[in-house]
Length: 234
Image (cartoon, rainbow, N blue to C red):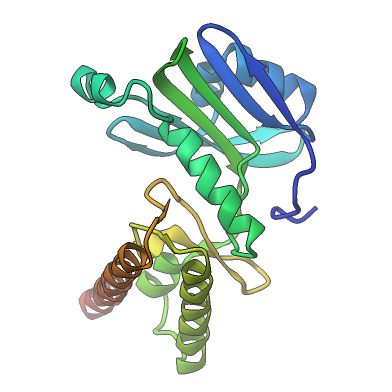
């Protein structure tokens, strides 16, 4: 099944201390683990990234691969300021589904778990399909320089992505070349959407997209520079 197949149903569970939103197609045992012991799944997964208050692991379940993210609050003061707002996992769930619904190649989350005390938020978890492939950074930093045709193909896909983002007035907020995955079929996916936002005004959305594009160009140059320095040192 394609990772962006529209979901027709979801499972909602709620208690005083936890709220869950899960794709109805998820295995029942995985839903139960997410509901009762999500922290155990973080410990059992293959660590992909541990950065500040966020942990990202790859999770294998019944022959399927997922990415599970854990978001902790950075400080008590930060938590107090945002007690009644949506969690980072829920915000990412919302924008990721909006992007996928509009044809953007972004992984569609299949579970969102929020630890809460009534209406007050705490830490949270987000589960989505693992996208198999190589990151754009890997292409740029390793191996021989890319053929011109490959470079043009990547930029064509990136420009198309920006056109799609403009249609829903979305800005990524983070254009690190490691956030783009080239799947075996050659299609480019955008992942790690924690900073993506849907903006209320066209001006704000365009400003964010312009800023992110400049950052992307700089990130591309840095990655190519690293490859060139390695080649000179060899």
